[in-house]
Each structure stands twice: as C-alpha cells, then as structure tokens.
Length: 437
Ligand SMILES: [Fe+2]
Image 1 (cartoon, rainbow, N blue to C red):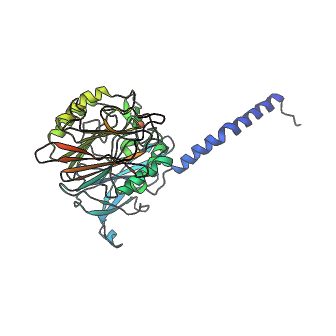
Image 2: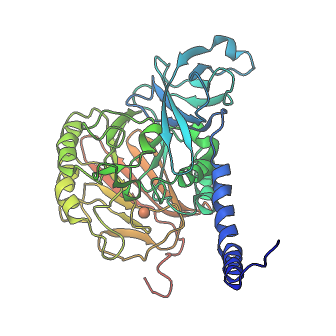
C-alpha cells in the first residue's frame, strides 16, 4: 500500500532542493575545478630552481608529483646544439617528502647539482625514471665578478593566475639574461591553500625551471602552526630549495648567496629579528663582494599610511648604515616607493642605502608620499630590473606594460662611497586616484 508524503516532508524537500540549487553548484564546481586543476600527477610539475650559496658551481631544483611515484631522480648534462647530449648526462638521486595540503597529497622532490662549471649552460630533467620533465636549461653563474642582471618583484599575492602572470612574464621578457628572480615576500595570499601556490607556479611557468629564485616569506606565508607557534607555510620548505646558511631555525627563510660580485641576503622579517641582526653583522663584516643587496618583506620605510615598522627599522637599519648596504628591497605595502641614499636620519645623504617598496600583484593600498621618497606610485603593478656592471649599478622599475617608471644609477668610485644619479623618466606620476599627489 502506498502512502502520500506528508506536507511537512514536502516542505522540507522543497527547501532542501532550493538550498541545493541556490548555494551548492557554484561552490562545488569552483572547489572541484580547483581540486582537478591542482591535482598532482606522476609527471613532474611546479619545477623550480633555487639559488644556492655558490651558484657558479651548484644549483638546486624542486618539483612535485603524485604520491604513487617510486624513485626520484635528476639528470644533467652540458647543453649542446643537437639532441645527443643525454648520453653524457650525469644521473643523481633526489630526496622526497610528502605534503598533505588542503586539497591533495603530493610528493615534493629536491635534487642538488654540484661540481658544475661556472658560466656554463646546462640542461637537466627530473622525474621518476619513467615520467620525466622536459629537458630544461639554466646557466651557472660566472666565478668571481662579472656583469649581472636580476629581477626583483614585490607582493604577487592575489589573482595570481588572472592578473599576476602577465607581470612576471613581461619581467622575464625584459631581462631574459636575469640570473635570478627575487621575490620579496607575500608570493601568495593564503599560506596553506594549495590552489594559491598552484596559481603562483602557473604564473611563472617554465621561467622557474630556467632561472633560480631568491624568495623570502612575507606575513601571508606566516601563521600559527600545529604547535601554536608562528611558522612559515608548510608548503615553503618542501617546494623550494633555498640556502640553509642562516641562523638555526630559519633555514631557507634567512640566507645569503654570492653571485658575480654581489652578496644577496634574504632576511625573514616575520620572526627572530634580534638573532638575524647578530647573524647579519657577521655576514656583512666578512663580505668580499663590492655590491650588497638585502631583501625582506616588511619595509623599514613604509609607503602607506599606518604601516610603519619602527622596531625593525631601529634594530636593522643601523647595521645597513654601518656596512653601507647598497639596496634594501621590500614589499608589504602594495604601493611603490623609492628613496635616495639614506644614512642615519638623512634621507638625502651623500652615501648610504637605497630603500625600495614595490608590488607586482593587483592588490593595492593608498600611497602616502613621504620625505624619504624620490619616486612613488599607487595602483600600479611593477617589476624591477637591476644590472650591475663593474662599478655601476643601474636600476629600472617598469609597469605591467613594460613602460619605464623609475630609474637611477649607483656609481662606486675608487676609494669612495657610492654616488646616486637619478634617472627618473618623464612618465607621469601615478598617484592615488582623486588626489594631487
Ligand atoms: Fe602583501
């Protein structure tokens, strides 16, 4: 005998059906699309080179696969014009670690190439012995001093797939001879979201497999870990291979590398400021390189209202002053600001350090024009190309269209401190909307 559903049941069923129609499909489809897009496979993806303490003879590479691969290998040979180089390839085993993310579980692999020849083009591939990446190419750094180009970008962070990709790509197109790409923190917005990291890797694509990164974590890569302590994203160390020559506890987030006459130092401005100050003193006191650039996330001179980092400035800036660090490259403020030479309280000194805040992604804050700035910008996606040749450093900041927005040169004359020559182009100032700044 059949019975009709009760009116209560019908009302509930209609409500449930309406709820599903209104709320679920969009949320489901977005999540499942993300899950499918970022799912690891046996074929390597997210292939990325990492700077090493000596990039003239060593290079590190990371990649990701699904967890069902067995074996983790790399092969490397000097690049040749024809296809016969694989027979000369050196084979090495890599290390692997599993990472369970919010949407998947993956293996992250690291191989470290050593004993390389300086200033030499190599080709390499990574995989499990059956599933291989393409053969990628990179050039080792020259030994000792040599002309050097590098790219620096501020926060990428948001809309990495849709709006940051074009910036990193035009940056590479402007300077394909770049020896590394420096990311000053906040590469992504949500540190434990694999989709954010997937978009970041997608944006730079094969550039990451050709040019090593120098990256430091921003506040968006930091948060409370399982123990309640503030920790770097659980993705950071498995997915990047960066130097471990910094203070203990800050491996791969505070380090330095010497490349062609430049000492590039990454600091972790999220934590352990005092320990890093002591470490920095020793790294700067024993520096044989004529040029020194430091990067970290939180600026010591802010370019936006209410975002001053007084404690950091008071602790670290005297060390930058003492050792006449050439440039300090930062992010965090989602605006652009660039100083003249700063020393002590003098923001237009004869000698000192140039401070820069920049942003490459689309998230923007208001610009607060201040005494220390020679050039500023609001609501502008930028990248910087820095070229060092002997006693001259040339700096260019360009917009997402590749248009020159800011420039200067530092010149080191024998026995004297660097002199700064402004080369600001006629490109109109991009101030806050509705303001005369
Ligand atoms: Fe940021």
